[in-house]
Length: 439
Image 1 (cartoon, rainbow, N blue to C red):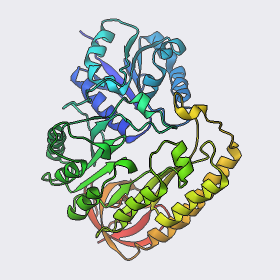
Image 2: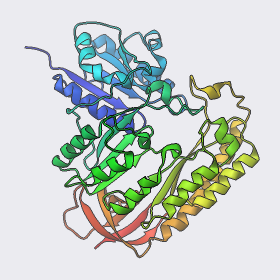
Image 3: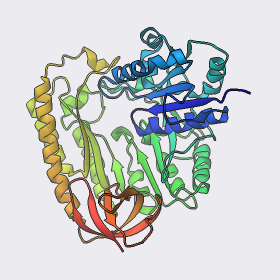
Image 4: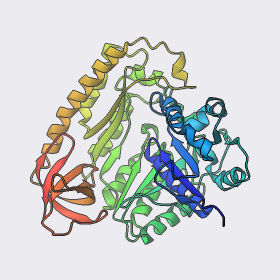
């Protein structure tokens, strides 16, 4: 009797990685593998890695080291994703028990690589360079999220921001055809999902290979797929953010009233050093488009503090931009050097203590902005999609169209299922969430 083929997959990092893992899982299941919950149960152990954060590769090697003893029991190991592309065959040197190293641009070759692994090969690589044109499309996606279906519409990045490793680990920008995206949206709706999130390193840099649709057109079309009630998208780049995106949100109720638009810095000098190729004025013009919409569109952003050469005045300009925009959410980070990026040659002279101080000042100010913004919702009635429960507090956890967390009580004897919708009256607010009761 043949031994059952089992695998364990752990995912590090962003939503793109999480959705890549859904496609990897579906591909492996199609190859006859069964997913298990622990490394000990698995015959094949895979780590889908991310290299955006500081010391990401160290975390991966620590994890590999924790479980290397399982190799003696016949387990096979594979490293996937951005750290795999970044480190390449050096992974075999640092962790000789690893048998498979594959960047995300090579996932379309997974069936072939798995077959080679089963045939006994010990050093299999999938490390495509920036010349690759194909995207990873599969109908065998194993959707793990119970309430939201993800669709990657564009892979890779051509922006080459000086601090960012993504263009080197994910390859060049490659868009899927609008026809294939809409076909997948219809399949997701047929599975019972009512919310779709479109993904891309720069999702609004989408260029339809068929020449049929702009990003705004595609966004609108996905929102008109029968059965779909909510459409989100992330992450946008200011250089490719166009006015017709706002118009689409304004005219199509299925498009969520939330835009994530990373600014990174409020200083023109720092933005130039970051190679972001826009100015604060350019960025603020796009913010004005969003604020001028008929719908109230929630805004969130990413900010890096302590970039090499950032002066106190540069930081004050970032704080000024924060005050002007009044974001509902900010993801802020201290600068840390990433491998192979142009910023590595810049002198990083800002002490870690100063970076930490600036970050805390920014976060404290943003917390006060959010305290005011969220309090404005008290007394409102809003539609909330259920995401789960918090039994300890006797609350249901959900999210509004503006992507704000809402925790609410519900008089129903049976808790509503994830993916269902409830009308909720907001009774209280915190800086990061709203509190209410179902109507």
